[in-house]
Structures are given as C-alpha cells and as structure tokens.
Length: 274
Image (tube, rainbow, N blue to C red):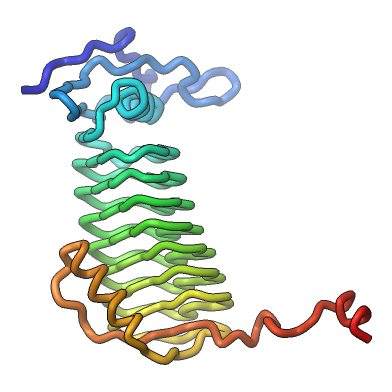
C-alpha cells in the first residue's frame, strides 16, 4: 500500500499558465519551486501524479526519491509532454512514465532503466552513457543524439537525424526512421526494422546500421557492409533481451572510409615525413 509523503510547502503553479510554469523578472523558470506533496511511497517503490507539477518539481521529486530516499523504482503519472524530465540521473534505478514526456527526456543518464508508456518528443536519451530507455510508441527527431552507451528502444517510428553523432550504444527502432539517420555516426549500432529516409549514414566515421526495410538513399561514404556471425549474434541477442520476437532479415551499412582520409597524413605531418 502506498503511503503519502508530505513535501516542503504547497504547490504554487504559475498564474495564467495551464502547465504551471512560472518565471521570475529575469525570465528564469521556477527559481523557487516547492517539493510536491503528492508522493506515495511503498518500500522501495514510489509514484506521483505530475499533471499539476512544474518541470522543476518533477525533477526535484525524482532526485529526492532516488538519491536521498534510496527509492529504486519510481512511477511518474501524467507527465503531460513537459520537457527535460529525468535528465542527468546517474544511478541505477527504474523510472516509469505513464504518459508522454516532451523534448529532451532522459538526457545525460548513466544507469537508469526507463520505460515510457507513450510518445516522446525530440532528443530523447541525448548523450545517454549507460542504461536502457524503452519507448512504447513513436519518438521525435534527434532520438539518441550523441548517445555513448546503453540501449535505446523505440517501438514505433522516429523522426529525422536519429543517432546523429552517435558515439556508442545501440538504438533499436521497430518502425521507420527519417532523413539523415546516423549522420556523422562515430561508433555504436542502429537496428532499424522499418524503412529509412534519405541520406542514411551520411558522413559516418564508424559503427554499423542495420535496416530491414527500404533505404531511400545512402549518404556520403555510407556503403553496404559484409555480414558476419557477429552481426547475427548481436541482432538475435538484442531482440531476445528486449522481448522483440524474431528478428527480420537486415541489410548492413558501414562507413566506406573514403570521406575522412583515414590513412592520409595531415599537411604538417607530411612535411615531417618528407
């Protein structure tokens, strides 16, 4: 049974704003947010309704529960498309969003397992270092931008520039992806079960992109790659871990290593050789 945890002070949503966001004279958002008083705790689990809370109040509650109170499993009800939720959580825990967060959700995390039972806006899991983020519906553009590690699973379609500047980790999309997916990808894997838009893997440095559907066009220096046993093992393992069923057949795309002059010397280095 969940018990109510009283916070410090009452809720003070901003006047004239349906989202409850308030600003000071400098235009800063909610400089004196109060801890919400609607948190329910049951041992190592907690939940609270975010419908009438500000962004800062939601993040304050998450940090207090996870860092101060040692709660390992937190459910956030009705995130109501608010931006920048659960950013910078650097501890192993479970966070569940029952509803759709807005932009920049779960960025800079290192360790959490996050489930989003809804859609999510732009730049989800940006710069994620480790952990798992699972989105039960579609996601916006810049999904997994500059991701460094962990697994990001989207059970739907995503917008443009998925995994731009990806530095590691695995992005799995069960639907379609938009244009410029994998742009300037440096490392890691993308597993796309649907179709891919124009300029797939444009200017990528390294890594691998697997596509089961049609590719509208390849970007500069993105070429078909040779399939090997390690690719089969990776695909089957990720599908098994995340309960995605039997994987379809994929095409593999890699960097042709022509654009960035991998084996060429810089002008200053060339002079030293000569």
